[in-house]
Image 1 (cartoon, rainbow over the protein chains, first blue to last red):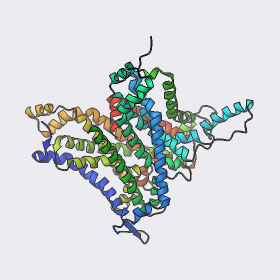
Image 2 (spheres, rainbow over the protein chains, first blue to last red):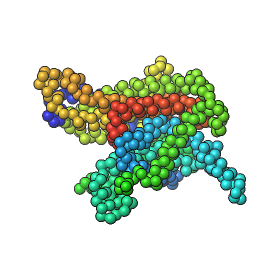
Image 3 (tube, each protein chain N blue to C red):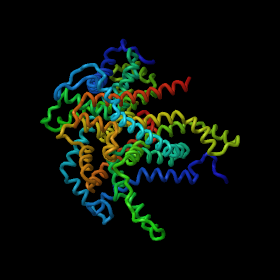
Image 4 (cartoon, chains in turn yellow, blue):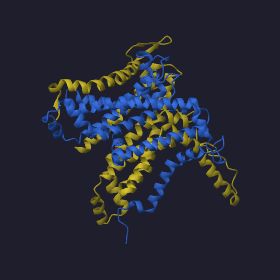
Length: 294
Length: 278
């Protein structure tokens, strides 16, 4: 028995599909649709929003000020993704080639931060990075030791918090598991005999890795890049808590439009710019994997 | 004897790299836990062991109230998400109907949509379409947050359950019917037992996602309803106090317990597959 045509069992079909469909429509698609309509509307007076169907709000998102924010968000997300890829690939490789209990433990160790509250993780990182934080204490301690033998100036705490650096570190901290897991999934499916053949033919360990494992793991790399880049691009909490005055990302600007600036139509347009970028990234991934299969 | 050629794990640069990543992931959390026992207001230098911060945290009505709100929201949102997600998964698995691909795509939207976009959508929705009365008695005043949480949790449950249904042998259901079971009996006695591990895993995932959410709650909640992440957020904005460390440690212990249960239920591999789809 394969899939049943819905018309043969209308009752069970309605019972099964009705509630989730209604919920999705009423409590997700309608709210998103309203924001979309708002993005094509204008504020008249203090609170009235009138639908005009114009693209003025979208044109405003292309203003150099907001284009700059968009660009900054993109490079922060890009730097995060690249760093996660570099840090995560060896970890994924190690997990894929680990055996038995070691594999399970490594997987759990990578996943546990994912299950940990985002706010707690961000707070933990703040305590480590701030002026009197652990990193500065450790560096300061080493510095003073070194100053006994070398003519060094007095130790100045490193500015590790409330700047773009902190935002990237915070995003790596949050997103790393999302990069490691798809990489691991792709490497785990890798046919080991390919690697052995490559080494039998005289390629070294690293050449084998680069020329066999990396190309085979490419789908994992692409999905890892996508699921790291998209949430980083739209992140709100990390730039808000770890960033400085010039670390505003697009989500922070959206929040400001909805809360303080009270320009909902413009905030809606920015929000949908983010949605369109997300769709674009997903479509690119879909296109890429389809072309690869063909 | 030489090492196996593919045993990358035994190479020292690899071990060093792993240790570095491990340190990066766990040093901040370790420091957070350690300083929750530190006998100093200023959280910088170790001054001795104390449990005072736990006492302060547990008697802090605002924090405990927020924690209770979070657990209530997570429990109710999980229950609703479990029902909706399972129904959606069964419908997609069982029936062929026009617009199926479109529905599958739409169901994936809450998973891929950036949190901030969903947050502002909920803000607008509850401001303009369904204003949520503020003076409702507890826990009804959490209703809008629960609705928002269900909207992003139940598609995850649907994905997990749908994956599990892929391994179901439909002949079992046919056998049940041949033996006289009606739709409901076949569903209850054959399909639900098969789905059970996925139901548990989906419930845990929904519970964690709900408990973890800050952004969507921040936009949905009125000024009077505070959840644990929102409360911690306002505390962190003011200053870093050991009280936050103690509260975080308590939640961390809860998270580890839940993760252990999830891993026991599904195995690490199964949990990984769930994440792979998100």
